[in-house]
Length: 160
Length: 289
Image (cartoon, rainbow over all chains, first blue to last red; front, side, top):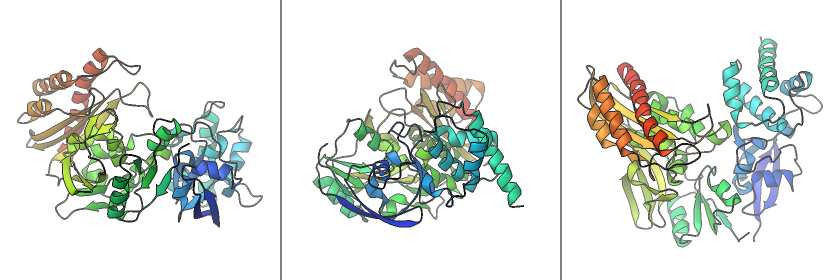
């Protein structure tokens, strides 16, 4: 099978990789690119553990062919912190223990960041609907939702 | 794994040429939220994937001079949601498309894919049928138009001929006092497959329903246009008797299956209930349109 040569941008860095035509974006992130923060939960778009941003839009990287990345920009959980400085959502998830096993956490964080970029003051209902595609089998969601709401409040305060 | 090729042509002619030449071994990729799952499950093993998202006509939303809309077949639910005008004019079509899957799925899934996937339970299809939408398809023998209700042929099958690609949906101009709505019944609050889906599109003039279309999903091998239900509404003031007649027409149109989501008896009863509720929402919106 002929390999495809793909040029893309990942977390702001121009990136090139070779892939098979049927590789998913998640396969390439976790394999050749060694960006293992995105997790494979279901492989069928149900769990959201592989959530990434594609040109600023939240998608499941398991439901995207790696070849589709050509000419587009991808952001993963690895691009969320600035060096050692955690994103406010990451900091808040630690403080409020909004995670247990951690498998869903990268996807939840990427999705939550996408929400707060669109809506700085979401209601609890809006958070729950936005994150409905990120399954967590540990926390029961309440801690996650509270952490997102608390972060949103702090980020609003910080920009006043 | 069989050898698969991936193509992302920038013109429709190129896409149709490659798709037709592959003679049935090819599959179209729009958002991929169905096809990639099917490939992974081993249900399909395409020899060629034709990614249509680099073709401008398939990814654009155009409001035409007469007030209609042309929506590219690969436009995602999230992109359509962000259009400044579409949801005002076609709230029922938009809410149907936006019900499909999670935020992540909305970022990719398209109405074109929902229609071509051929599921009787596809949420956007009853709303598109109620809207009176037509599709443009292009194949080796050129272009043609067909009403949305003529596309599904049965579960997982369409009436597109070999080599034909769904290009766009055309929604007609809106009369004053016209609006639409879509409701579905699912056992959960979100993210499930419709047990019954109902789209209603109607026009009110001085309180009288002057035009109506009803689409019904998940109650037959294909999504249905229920003309008898529309006929019961047209000419009425949407009084209880007219709505009950329309609900009875919906129940009569049902040819559902028994499955884990609902029994034949349940689906048939719910079809009538949803018709009533959907008419109420569409009428309320039409009164303000």
